[in-house]
Length: 389
Image 1 (spheres, helix red, strand yellow):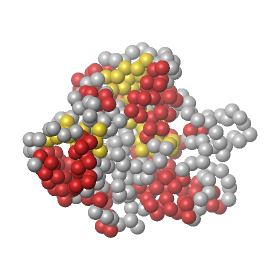
Image 2: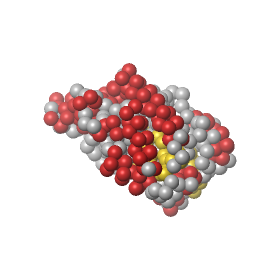
Image 3: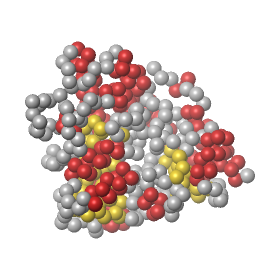
Image 4: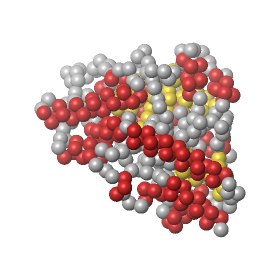
């Protein structure tokens, strides 16, 4: 079992959890290793004992996804390589030439770039550019609804400043008009409860390697509307209907072609088991407390400017700049001289930085997670004071 207490000194100073979490949840490494050492068979293909064991492991992980996200049916959980693939599958699998889609300036390039591709292929794209995700933000989205609007994409939380967007209000308004709602939960899965029995969205995309403390290379697209006519991005072997070159559509296997990433799925399953534990709840609460403590101390520093924060709820992400220094320079000094790892730049969300006034250089982003302590905040704030000196 992985023991955080035995990890090296980098863990305390690691503040890049919004890019990927570290360390991973207890049991993740062991679960992944088991698939490579005890049974490296291909799930859903052969019928021998080893293949059946790894197939059962994949389906157990699918069950855990339904339990954590309250998905009604197992077949509505589609394993992908991550949130990016899940978002591409939703966007390109739904939109047709002539359709209208609405996104916002808070969206990640994993949404914006596929939309630009669909615009070149005949779709109409509207991007709502408002920097405060309040009720006026909701009204601004609703004003863009048209008879031909097919899809609204909502980023659950900004990966730049952490602010939660009003997905429930936007989702209710869109669904009441028959518009499909896609929720990008890349940053919120593991930080914010996502209950598909009550949340008014049709599709949810998330990854396993951030807030869920799982491995990279695995994510899901969750389908919360059985009437969606979703088209696969890829065709290939599924282990089913091998006699047909044009097989019937079957959820989820028609969307999981090729050999599945069983080690990563096993790691995600182990992470989801930890997510439901009291230890994880304590770690999540601790990250929230550290975030608030750090935010208060940053506001007291005259040479530090915090960007994008309001009274709205947020996940534990803070973006800031330092007067007279480029974000890249700040991040390099924090890493090389203070053993603190952060991310600098535009964070693959250029329109969010345009709205916040931090384009083209971006910000320094800190993101709290599993493994951070009070010492982490003290270490960071000490380093930032030294930067001023």
